[in-house]
Length: 147
Image (cartoon, rainbow, N blue to C red; front, side):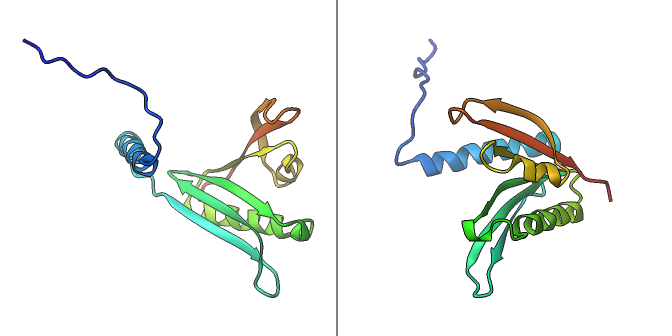
């Protein structure tokens, strides 16, 4: 006689969400490595600081396989239009090339800086509208020359 299995269910994790999140990521990473090889994952945090050392903005870059992803770029109001954004993106691209990434990608909203990324040579590859209302999200990629 077969044992009855418990009914499967979907659970919204509360107090255990951190542990569940780690388990999910570990499972995905194991699968990805088995399928596509070592990720060579790195996460780099770059900051833009003023003369007094205060953080005025920064960029977070994730790199894996042969690609790099700009997770975020943020500048304080006082730091905008002073060249910090361009310098941060140039450093991210330099690091991506150095590690052998063949592309650099990111996403931004219509109320953020799509034109800025286009001026840096990024090409829009997709988008979606209506979230937030009246705005749109844009996905960009920049191909990097090999070696």
